[in-house]
Length: 476
Image (cartoon, rainbow, N blue to C red; front, side):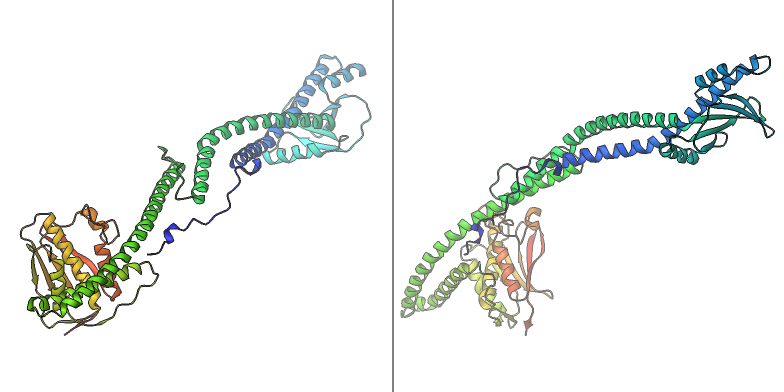
């Protein structure tokens, strides 16, 4: 028996307790939320600035219309230069004109020299795209540009023309952009903080617990006691936490079982060592008994010698059980009926009340390892006898028959429960007896597959259970 189960877990580099603050999930969520809100605010700013520019221009046009009304009050539709300049200053424009039938009428003029290139703006037929394009142009336009604004006049066939400088519009747009940017940043910070706090408690903190658990579990999966507790959450994080908790519990149990098996293996190795010495002494005694002239002793001595030889071989094979590659079986022609009969006489020695029926053909031969076939049949018949005696079955009978599918071992026991059927060929899991280890069927199937065959459960129920041994070569 090897002691690989006691080998320590390879040491892995322990991750740092805490990395750089900007590498954490919290910071990345906060930065991503802030950037997303600012991006959306930027998309909103463009039409908002376009509306601000359009409103600014319409205010100037409306102020120019009101200033032009002063001309209607004058008898000759003329005002003094001083009053015209005062009206234009109040309207924040340079000149006001009207166009009718392609005739240009100057209403108000400051008579001040203007420098810079004129840029025409027609408010009568603007579109969303043109306004967006014009607002970007307004931010980067030269300060000395002159805007010539055209809009509907006092009558349907008239057009009012207002001349304004570009600089005030550009200055107001920049101030508006700064206010919007500051307000957007404040809103983004508040929204990002609220979202961050919610995500921190709903996502980041649970993920930190899961991450810490995974890291600790990786470092010491067998001995770590601070396991992740199950949660009542039903979302993806909750399911991941519950799955990790179940996995940690299962792996920890596997490590405990591994340690117990290692200790058991050490104990079995010591027991085997002493058992082989005792069996060797018993074999010497059997050799002495074989030379006795008593007919009864001479009849029983060969059977005793074969039993001791099998016991010694079994002890030796148990010591070699942990080897990666077991010894191959010694395949040879075996008389099937005689081999099963001998196995039954050994298996049922402690249960004389169990009836054994050997319905195998008398001359049937099979290619198998005699020792493996003997151990396999003994395990199956012994298990059946124990089940029938424990279940108080009547009658208590084990029948061995040969079908077209293989060799069937059938008992009259109470049948196997569903839990035992699910783990039938798993070690330490399939035994229905309180003192059983669950290794009998595992060893039997291992012996069958070693000879190129298989052992399966053919059927079970209240009337009995049938195990089927399939061997690759049946000979006449």
